[in-house]
Structure formats: C-alpha cells, structure tokens
Length: 259
Image (cartoon, rainbow, N blue to C red; front, side, top):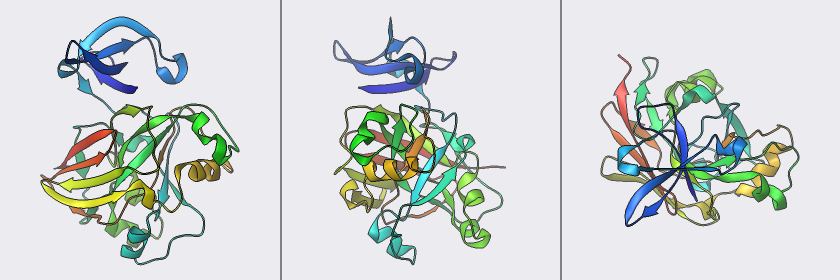
C-alpha cells in the first residue's frame, strides 16, 4: 500500500494511492492510519487534484544514523563506527514533497543527503532485529539536509541538522517494501550526484531498530533516517534536489533563500 498525506486546500487528510479505471486516485481514509488503522471513507480524490504533504509529521522525533555507508564514511574522513552513530533532527525540520528548503543565513555550505526513511507504526522498546518488521508501518524517502560548515564548527550536529525545512520526507509511505537491496540516487537538477544500493548499509534496518529501541522508546510516527551513500555535496539557492528510491518513488524539493 502507498499511504499518502495530502490536501485539497482543506485540512490534511490521509489516503491510499491506487488506480481506478486507469487514473491515479487517492482513496480517502477516516482519521490517521497510525492510530485509527486503515479505514476508508468511500471518498476518492484524483491524485492530480491533490497536493502531497509530508506523509508523516513525527509527533516525537526523527532519529538518524550517521556514516552508515562505507564510502560515505570515507568521504567524510573517518571510519565506519563500530555501533550505529545516532543523532536527532527536530520534528519542526520536516517538510513534504515540493516544499522549499530554506537556505539559512548562518551557513555558506548546505549539503543534500538522500536517505531511506523508516516510519514506526507501534510504540516499542527493546525490539529484537528479528521482530523489527512488526513495529514498522512502512518506508519513505528522506533528505538529511546539513549545514556542513556548522557541523564542523559546532562540534555537535544539532544546529547543522536541525534548521526548519532540513528534513524533507515523501512522497508517501510504502508498506509493501523490502529495504535490503534497492537502488537509491540523488540528482541536483539533471546531474546525478549519489548512486548506490541499500545493500551497502553497514547496519541494516532491523539492526538499527534493535539498537535505537534498546535505549529509546520509539513512538508511532517516529521516523528513522538510515544514512546516506557517498556523493553528498553542496546545494545552492535555485537548485532542485531529487532523491529516488527504487520501489518507492522520488522526493523533490527546491532550495530557496531565507531572505
């Protein structure tokens, strides 16, 4: 299933994306699927008439994994951590497909980082890797936007990773998805910048869920960004950045000036 969060110039709603007589439609849901389950209202909306929003707005947190691809760890000048390297992005950094990434005044070096995102569907703690799939609602695409100069100067990553608009998510949540070996790529305009496969992750999704839940309760709607491949680089005002994951789709956002 593809679960979308969308608007038609009304309050945000949820729905399932599918085809009806050859036309892409959204079957509208009653309530939030994280809490009400999949309950269809019977209404359908043409996808072309809807504006897709971030498929989930975490009520709690976005948990991220750093240096989770060998080549990216090397390009950043370090070794792969012996355990997952965990940091947080605030939920206020989340935006949806097509929404602008604001270039902050405090930085001169803002980078893209295309990533596979995991959406948690159940409250959980101390989940084993073998049971991780039981607490995952599905998967979407993320862009862990980073002010690289602030990351270096601050000595910790909260500001560099935490600006408003620095966590694009979308375009929807794919529930029928195997994250073990799919293509992931990032384009800046028409230029391919990142190209890899999720099989290149050092720590796989089940291991990541097990590790994080060993010290932190995960709540419905929490998002885990699983790390970025090599090829990260700067974005400038006016650039379009698109992250594509095989089996999910493409997330595109434009970089705009804060001023």
